[in-house]
Structures are given as C-alpha cells and as structure tokens.
Length: 210
Image (cartoon, rainbow, N blue to C red):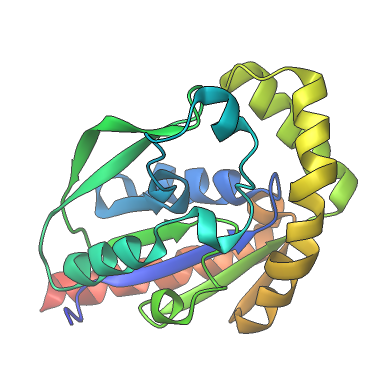
C-alpha cells in the first residue's frame, strides 16, 4: 500500500448529502482529490432489453460489480492508474466509454452500499456515513432523477417504494455500524466538515513532506 494516499469512504442513503460533502472537500483541495463512485460499477446488462433493465433492483449489492471496484481501488492505493467504467443512467446500462483515473493523495470512495462489502471497506482509511431523514432524502432523489437522469416522477416514486426504501432498511442502514464517523446532514454539518477537512489537510501536508 502507498501510505501517501488517504482513502475516505463516504456512504449513506440516497439523497443523504454525500455529494455536498464531497463537493466541499473537492472545492478546498482540488486536484489532490479523486472520486471513485460505486454507481459507475453497476453491472453491464447487454443481454437484456431496456424494458427488462428497468425492472432490475439497482439497490441491492448484486446489481454492482463491487469486486472490480475493490480491485481498482487497490491499484490506486498502490499508485497505479485505472480505467474506470462509466454508467449511463438514461439507458440503465454501462457505457462503452471509460475514464482514466490517476492516483492522488486523497481518494474518495462514495456510494450507498460501499460499507456493505468487507473487502472494499477494508481498503478505506476513514469511513464516513452521512445520516439524513428519509423524507429529505426522498425529495432530493426526486429532484436529481427527474432533472438530471431523465426520469418521470411516477417512475422515481415507484422505484423508491418497491426497491430503494426496502433495500435501504436491509443493507444501507445496517452498514452504518461500520462507520468511523456518522455525520448528520452531510456537507451542511460544519463541525463535522471542519474535522474532516483538518484530517485531510494534515495528511496532504505529511505526504508532501515525505
């Protein structure tokens, strides 16, 4: 492992505020930070039609190729670049494109299920769980999926009721026990944010001194 690389895991339910927390970190530390998103590791489903892909439960661990993500994170920790897959939410399938990711002093791993997988979470130095009320999370998910992912309101609500909420209760909420730090309201929690920023700043300073 490369001790000059700090891996932060940021988990929490859909719409919990993970992105806001990450944006605050990236705004402060810029190119010193790389983000690895679990969403990009949804499995390729070329053998299914679009209609069939729409019926998949995307909120359970089996929907994701987490072994590949863990392998990629391990390579980044060793100082090696990776070709990260790109997921197309409008097609419910992995794109044919990839993005080259180079290792940086700080790597953020984010996703709702990243703490559910032990081999993946064992590669993280600090595990942060963003904890937000369910009604707030639902409102944020509706806004995101309708405005950014081309979904209809009806489809978002149906998916939330049939898979998102049950899977949150089954997998996401129980994974909170693995967190080193539980942060209510994510990036809006200024006390927690200040602590996280301080830890990252110290790591970068120490890495530069080596």
